[in-house]
Length: 72
Image (cartoon, rainbow, N blue to C red):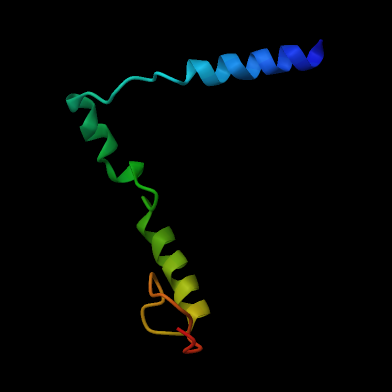
């Protein structure tokens, strides 16, 4: 009984998210704001880049394939 109720609840939740609609042209300006980016905080992005740069021990460790060991 409890399993059926849980399955029904999950199905209703997933079904409710199936048609969320489209983004209207006048709403696209809100999505283009810097706060909506994954790296919206420039200081946090710089710290993250520094961590990857230090771990890779190579110039431009942010997005460069391979490590500082020369294996790639």
